[in-house]
Length: 203
Image 1 (cartoon, rainbow, N blue to C red):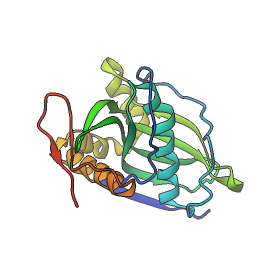
Image 2 (image 1 turned 90 degrees about the vertical axis):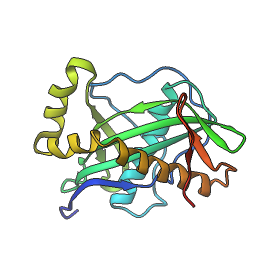
Image 3 (image 1 turned 45 degrees about the vertical axis):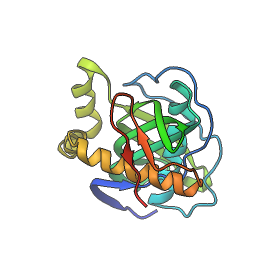
Image 4 (image 1 turned 135 degrees about the vertical axis):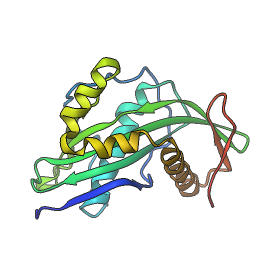
């Protein structure tokens, strides 16, 4: 595969691959390198950037969202910083990734649980393998900055810019939830975090 390198600061691919269903358990640990097998392939999606993010978002739903308190639906948010697919056996995708579980109450999606999982995904897309081989996660607390520096390297400034922009994150999250609601024909017009006013979805 020819080398393709996108500089995608503050760019969001709207999630259309989230899976409806219950998610249970507690939050995944941060700062470790996991071995991950995709539960199924993404054969129906054209290869390239969209397929990489689809595979990542399936992992976010199945392997991370499922470790939070349960919700009726799980919606990921992927804010990709950079992609390097010069090696099809180790495609690298850096970004800030989120996952949220919701319950529908009237016309409002009430947030049950969720959180941020920034880091670097490693994908093997050679010979239709289509699997996530590992995820280098930014650590928590005192481990946050050292692991962020190690994982993002010369992309650290871009990562910090994304992480510090609550307004941008809220906008992209609203777009992701709106796309999900439309795709699945859900009778919701807003989403709401506990203790915060509801946010109107886009058309």
